Image (cartoon, rainbow, N blue to C red; front, side):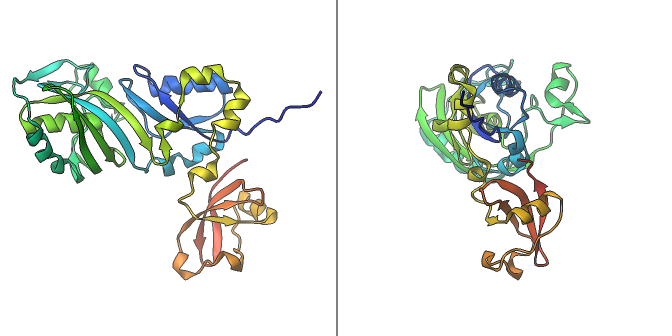
Length: 305
């Protein structure tokens, strides 16, 4: 009998996380399907948020920190007239207002939430205070104070006014931005209070929602089909990091923690001192993240593939 090829579990799988599910639960379901391989994710989604959840499988977990810095896009709904403890539908109502903003008033404040701004994270968040998550402290009714911190919002656009109570926005933002906090702060700015009533993540860097696999479809597919058709290879995801080709002998040296002298054809010179590269062996498999220093490439993070 012919032996079937076993496809590599090293790469990125894009999941479309459903409503009312934690990111940890989504990871657990994928682990159960693919076997107990190592899995990490690039950016947690709240249970009340849906959309793109990129999962790093196997050795791809070593690239999570590089993907986490990518821009993220969200579509979110804001409900006016209430501020809530969690800044979303789950929380208790703190204050209310009968005032509702006009389209003109909404458009006028959008520029205040673009560029680098200071944002106070939601008190119900996973940020840690002396080793404990802020949300856990809040649930124990302890005093929680989170300092505002700089975040970068590249664009914020009003997409639709659903009714006098609700509006839909698109936002593209950097690492550490809370969409719930944008909704809360717009409500304060407009003098009517607000919370995020729906959040859908459309993309994380090059990972788009139209590439995402639902958990229902994942459950119906054969493991090898998932690995062959839906897992993106590590180099494909890191195409913004320059690649250098290395020989088998050089790959062995890098895996042993030793430096190598790049080929003249790589064109590396003084202007590349300190630059990060992805080294690939002759079969295009990633060997290591390498950094150019004093005419040599030194391994920074080695892949065991």
